[in-house]
Length: 102
Image (cartoon, rainbow, N blue to C red):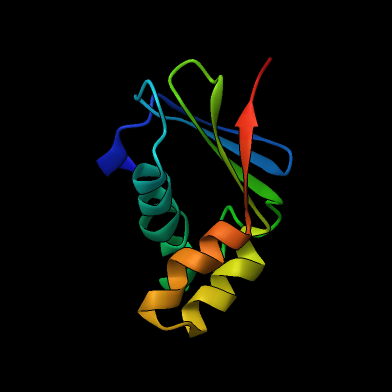
């Protein structure tokens, strides 16, 4: 995750929250973080991965106000690992919903 220089990474039970150093989390930022930051521990065969019991990963802006929530990262990672390159974005999107704090 260091390449995106998040302001913080918090693990609260089964929810990991990444507070990015961005005013707005774009689709490009989000997909990049999920594809190359979240999946890496599993693809590198890290048996102690933080995703083991994680039910969602929140990628939020610097104010923790808005962003995206990635659901069931462990299951979707297995699905992406079997997918062709042109389907990866679709799979990530299918496990995603928006997040805003009101």
